[in-house]
Length: 75
Image 1 (cartoon, rainbow, N blue to C red):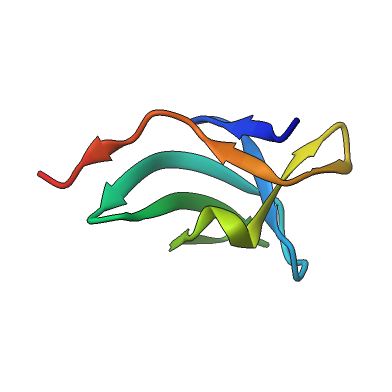
Image 2: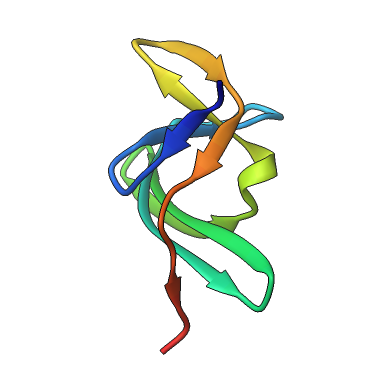
């Protein structure tokens, strides 16, 4: 079973990179996007990714593909 993603989940791009915290999930037409924030040293980053590009991270280990939880429509 795929790990469900929710606000507060820690994720990482399947291609690697920093661990990121999910700050929101949303749908745009039929496309879901996950917004994440992270720090690179003292510089803060923020971007949105499709759920297929992310793995949930737990206890310093990547646990596998994710499912997107409830989403909210664009306002």
